[in-house]
Image 1 (cartoon, rainbow, N blue to C red):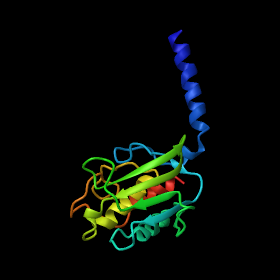
Image 2: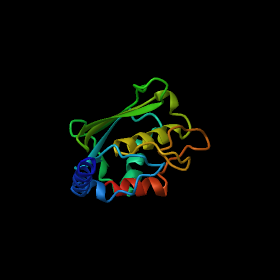
Image 3: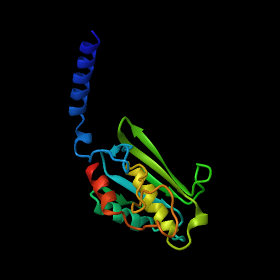
Image 4: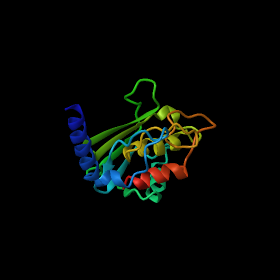
Length: 174
């Protein structure tokens, strides 16, 4: 009886996996990419509410992710944006930035990015923007120090462009 139940569950699981086209094009999960957080079904419109007087370089970060194949662009109309980037301390204690996703099932419908104004010196602000926008795009943290999605940053791991692997992950999600 246990074998029959297992066989039925396995068959149902295969059918469900086969019916999920959004998952089909993704690379197999690895230690560096344990799971995706979701994907966008529509164009992502980013509004930069950081005030424009800092060095977050949100538009540059959007341009870099756009190169990956993610359908993301800047907008000057806050009412049309589904991603809003603000210069505020993170909502996560001890973090210098965060991305709060709004989802419907596995579809990402919105995101708010908090970037701490304290860390706008050097290239840290730009790194924070590209990292947190990666989360808005559905990417988790990476275990690779060569990835913009690496969970922490210092002068050795700070990046302002996604790595080839980051771009592959993002492109595979769309």
